[in-house]
Image (cartoon, rainbow, N blue to C red; front, side, top):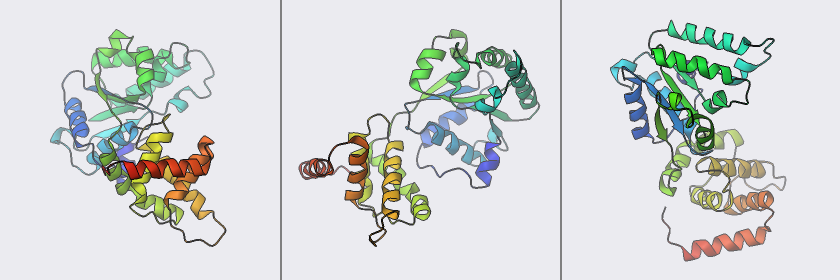
Length: 279
């Protein structure tokens, strides 16, 4: 998948911030040796968003000279291993991909969830050996992502692979940055759902997501909460105005967690009354 072409066609989501992280990626991609980076982080912190932001900078020619006109190709792991008919077919496919990539000037291979390649019990494990050989030769540049758990389990134990990668760990944003991220992207949600989101409800979604959706990280958990609440509003049949309010967000939390709506509302309002507004 040609990611730069997608960016130029406006198919990548707008990303707010991450300037320091993008600068670091650019620096690694400019190295003569070991121009490879792995981005790690918990689910929802924005690993894919960071990759997209980097690609968008390339598409906008807002990168150092050595990355101008760079090509970023994403490998679809599901396609690599899909419908393999014989032993070694996945390896043959991957060799073909790397050979084609090596023939493209200023190209970067992008692999999301690369830890799947290094799962010794998985069908793609053979490709990891081929990848390490290509990296040792310096014939490709690699940008990849992994969950922290996948990195620890499947990659950190592989000292050969680890020595070829520069690691960038992405942490969940604080509430202030998360609010900026939501503000920068909420317009596309409003357009899609036909629901207005007052600015005051965004901090509420952050607080509730942080408190009740602990299995996922910000900002993804807050986006998910807003998306669900906006579906609830646009599906209402009581003739109400299509405007999101705090009670709609509380309703989604109640429905998802099983906590009675009144308790969610009371608990959150008490929290707001007793806490300083840091946003």
